[in-house]
Length: 309
Image 1 (cartoon, rainbow, N blue to C red):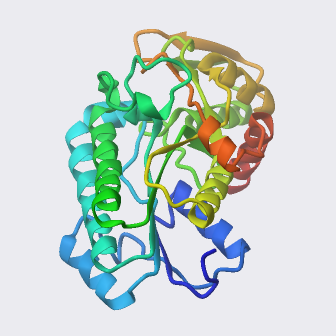
Image 2: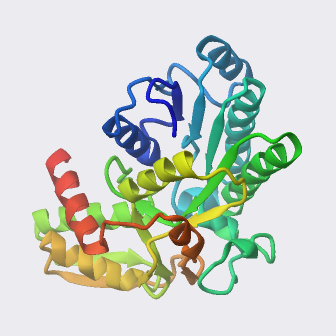
């Protein structure tokens, strides 16, 4: 168990996953959590990251900070998604290693797996086929980060864990209609459409691809659980356990938001990979399972967005 007085550095504490991890650890009684906003610590800056570690000497590190975005952002700015995430990861991982951090948690993404991987996706499918082209830059960075943690663990005995979540949503998400992910984008679209009584909403793609969605509080619970209970560096999938078509997701969110207009689809826009369902049986056998249902998560997210916008 992590000592309650330990220094825990949560990188990206204002983001979706990072803020959820802060809430979870504070709920469990941890008060010595190090938080540095981007304005005070640019994780891409090697010298700045070293100076921070020299001064603070964290005992544990959770790397939840990353450059993230939806299909259009990833497709348009693939170079930035690759280089900036590599910079962030290399700086934080190596400074954690060199400063003898007791345990390091690397957070990746389901996009690390081949676009045509068998379903559900098992951990051993990593690097068995080509990646999805629309987010290849981000995926390559995340693969490199995981492998660096794995190699440092195997070569030097450093204690690391690497968790690969499915699509996450929930408290403190980014509701950007252009660069956001599909779940928060649909939440915003249908809440605003219901408010304005719009007659029609036209959504990207065909609506046929299937995705798996996990509430970020369940992800934070997984981070907490495995930081306390696991000491092996091999990747672990963290997923909800079932998937849903984007069309059905849109219909559920529209209904929950009280939108009664027409939902149309624009097939000229990209769908992304057809299906991504994680096999999370390894995590389940080790003792972690999600607790927030998709319908409950939708209602919670609609309520939070409506109250703050």
